[in-house]
Image (tube, rainbow, N blue to C red):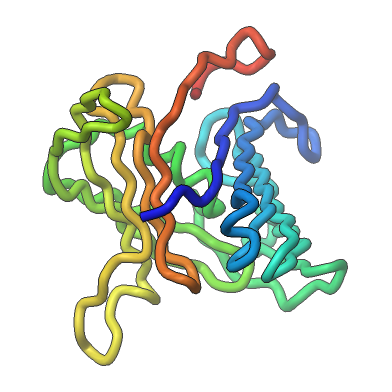
Length: 218
């Protein structure tokens, strides 16, 4: 394994979207100079679920590098649809169901639940192109040591309906998340697949962002 870069997940001050008060979650990911030569990533995701954490109102992803993106997903809850727009070009809306979230807010939705080995959380997620029946499985309780510090964690594996099997065989999950086994449920480790292999994110630091204007879920 080599050091590839860093990522930051933040809860920013509340926003109002179409008259509805929302959370504002943001994740920025960037590879370092060494990996830029192989697989450069400069990406920002923004998620706006309502303050009751019952659904997403708006989502965007912008990136430069190997795979540039300028994506906006708008949710029309009156029509129960989500529309994917890439570089200003809108695609055909997809149908959604009550309680649908975007890919970034999934990290936070899982934290709202009491985690217990063997439990499966069913959370509908859309990237604007397809509604995905996501089942987040609490796989096991596990001790992790990161940078000399020990964490008691739960390993949660989000299993996407469309990625569950290939040619009838179980496949290696595309994502694994380790949350602390306490009331904070901090994600201390995230493993995700990419085109060149996989990235493993390990916690460097976590701060309480309430003084910056956010409160509630952190």
